[in-house]
Image (cartoon, rainbow, N blue to C red; front, side, top):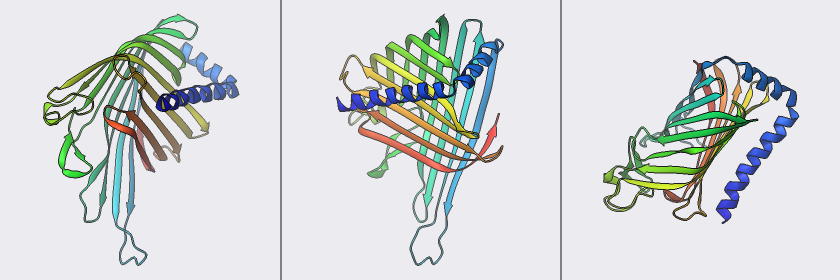
Amino acid sequence: MKRILTAIAMAITLFTTAQTTEKENLKKTEEAAKIGADKPNGWVKKGTFTFLANQSTFTNWQAGGQSNFSGNIGVNYDFNYKKDTWNWDNKFIAGYGITKIKDAEAQKTDDRLELNSLLGKKAFGNWFYSAFFNGRTQMDSGFDPANRAVRNSHFLSPTFLQFGPGMLWKKSDNLKFNFAPATTKVIYVDKQFTVNGSAFGVEQGRTNRVEFGAAVNGYYKFNVMENVSVENIVNLYTNYLEDVQNVDLDYQLNIVMKINKYLSTNFAFQTLYDDNAFTGFQTRQVIGLGVNYGF
């Protein structure tokens, strides 16, 4: 019950913050909405490639320390289509990172491929009839933290898929929430990982798990000040068929502080809760100087 309240509170806080900021910047928001409404039909595409790096080197350093290097690459690409009363928003996210400490094996710190697709048909006001798809997986093998010799995942295993109809509330491209009360969720895992037991919620000896439940997806991006942007992505899901009280959570926070056209300081935070994969919260945090390329 506590986890449900935590997840709901996070969603409510995000929504309330969005509304407060919208009111404080009402004029700017209305202008942005007007520009969005006047955009011509067709595709709008934009993306960013980012490279983050951190390095520490120690030689005869009496205070102690180990030389290390860490690097992350990421792609964030939007390709959206509009035609009259139809909107089709798509976002592709890819990321991979490693860290290497002297005299130790390199370990990955980030590994993800994710595609979000949201189709909307104008209903009334800011509401749209909608259909959504979310797919996420990984590119490289993962290893058991307790035993680096044991591989527990690899390319496309696991793969998580969600899709279903719903209702979309969309103020602008930077502020939208989708409510999908009839969502199908599919988890795929290679059979080699379920030989000796269950993995990522997939039962022993099987390769997939199918669930049916409800999903809430939110997206909010705004500028705190000039050259400082904050992006929030939240996904909530509950399974009607089993342990409905356990709400899966995926929340991402991306802050970009631009220095110039190509350089920025980037902060990324992500927290996951999925009791089928791990009993507890998983967190990821990355901060560093980034080299950016827009396309």
